Length: 163
Ligand code: 4NP
Image (tube, rainbow, N blue to C red; front, side, top):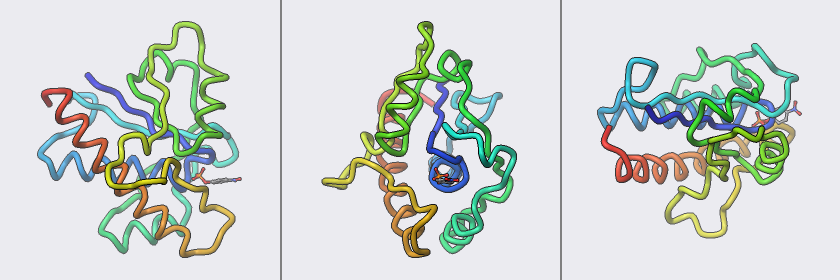
């Protein structure tokens, strides 16, 4: 089984959007995810402030506009066990990637990378910016950036694995 964890700071804006969107991409490609299937995905935050909460209403609204329902997702914090359980831990920005690298235990087997490493046709965009404190149109921009990352990640996964 391939396991992918999407990580941002609060797990209420960027990483749940990436989780929901990548699941939608997988399902549209005929790939089922979950414990009974060959791929399992989840999202988490490096911070703990929003643990247990549903995604930010602005992220939910933006996703809904594009036909994506994030309402069932709940925030959780990254755990040390995640580094053992997951094959890929994909950070939305460099700050979160650095925090993940700093907390990785010795027995970590996960590849720690920027999510946008997998995007195509996105020159110059290496990170998904934090929309939390900005204006509402930041959420639309973040949604579009995550779309590019998800498409690239799907291509990579389909080429590398037989699912
Ligand atoms: P996220 O956005 O990392 O994309 O979920 C944030 C959510 C909450 C906070 C910062 C960023 N916060 O400072 O509470």
